[in-house]
Each structure stands twice: as structure tokens, then as C-alpha cells.
Image 1 (cartoon, rainbow, N blue to C red):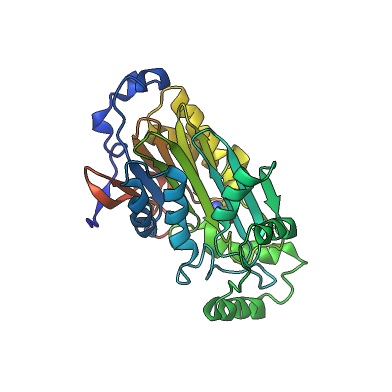
Image 2: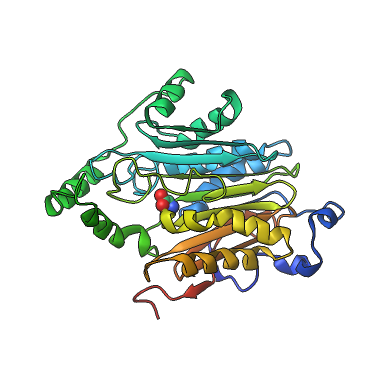
Length: 342
Ligand code: GLY
């Protein structure tokens, strides 16, 4: 498997498409670049690898690939921002947010879900096997159990020890005063570059079906009940099968303010290439942010298979896998350097 890092000057493989001439209608007349999968951060390479085992089959279905890809990260106890092994909330409980969207633009999500290893798989069941789009907390858990998902302990010894250490320094953080909690969060998602956050994945299968998913344990030591951008349609993820898909990672509160993934897709609809569309969302996050330490990163996958990425700050990576160049990690362009970076 190729494993290399390049600097993203243009949207990945964008040279193949004259972007200013692209339109949803025109794209159906030109051959798409597929299959292709993109995902956030360096753990995205392992996720892409898993997704590719499905995508490389002619009839491999996009959401089967995505569920398998993000599922690998959800199950990895060494990744402290997703699934098992994720950092808990301020009360020491691991709670998970996830959503999926399919090739018809149908959406399913869970938020504040406890004790289920694969929240993205549950989100898919919400989409397919319930009349609803978003289930939360105990209701989401009850639904998951009814669907056959077995509850299990997601708090690893390592994260339990980390939470105890944090709690010792912040004994009164929950429920009051909330300020203490916000201060603790400053060392995690807001800085961003060192915190690998949500796994967001977008893919186009060999049949041309576009889909996406986000899954996360959210920001460390969050206020119990806090839900981030990841399960919220238009914030953490948006798929318009006629145009393209986008997902987000980073400080959820800032991404929600601007409905970041929806911004990316709408910018593509109006002719921006995937990288420029992600840049537009990053600029809006920065403009609306009340902190000078916010990180957010966006990925875009257009309906013709062209991909792009952009971060508010340096340090954001896109993992991309296609037939032409294999699986590789690409450093996203950014608006401003992260604190401490050159
Ligand atoms: N972006 C993940 C979160 O803020 O929860």
C-alpha cells in the first residue's frame, strides 16, 4: 500500500477536471473518477484501507464500504477521539455521536449514545429501519439494542486514568462552573492539530453512488449532554448526490455555527472546486469564531470523484484512496498556521 504525504496544491487529481466548466448536469456526461474514498486525519489511511476492500468490488456498496472503514477506527482503543478508547465526558462516561448519508440524500444519526461500539452502524439503521433521522441518549441505546447491538464498556483503563487525572485538577467542573470545563477543552479540540478528532469519510463507489459518515466521541471532558457537529446534518456531514459530499472535523461548536458541510456542498453547487469550497467553509468558521485557537477541517468529494480539503489551521490531513494513486495522506492547505507551527 503506498503511504506517502504530499502537499495539496490543488484538489486531489483536480488536473483531470476543468473545474470552472464543471456543473452537476455536465458531470453526468463525463466519466467520473471512481471508486474513490477520502477521510479525515492520519487514521483515515487505515479507514480507507478497510473501505477499499468493499469499494474495489464492482458491486461494492458505498455505505457498506464506509461503515467498514469508520468501523475500524471506532473499534481501535488507541484512538482517543472515536469509539472505544475515546476520552469520556466530564462525568467519566464515553458518549458517541455519529451520522450517515446515502446516495439518495437520506440521513440517519445518533447522539450521546453510550456503550455501543459502532455508532455509525446504528445511525445507518436509524436511516433504514426507523421512520426518524436522529435518536439520542437512552432512546438511541434502546433502539440499538432492539436492532441487536450488544452494549459493552467503551472506557479503556488508559482513558479512565486520564479522566481521573483531569478530574483531580477540575473537581468542580461538573455541573458548575462550566468555565472550568471550557478551559479544559482548550487543550483538546480547539487547538486541533494535535487532536485527531472525528473520523469523517466520503466515498463514491464503482456504480457512482455517493455517501458519507462521521463518528466521534466528541471533545474531551465535555459537559454531559453536549452534542457536537458530527451527528448534525449540514454541520458534520452533508451529501447531495447531484453535487457532492462534505464532512467536517474540529471544534464542533464553531462548525455548527456556520453549518459548515452544507456550506461546502452549496459552494460546489455554485461552481467552486472542492478545495475552494472547503476554503469557503474554513473562512466562515474563522470569521464567526470567538476564539483565536479554533481548528476546523473540511473534506469535499464532488459527484464526479474530484476531492479537496482545507483547514482553518495547519496540521489537518486528508487520506485519499483511488485506483490511480493508491492510499496516501495529503496535508490540507490552511488559512493560518497552528500555534507553535512556523
Ligand atoms: N467535531 C467533533 C465534535 O466537536 O464533537
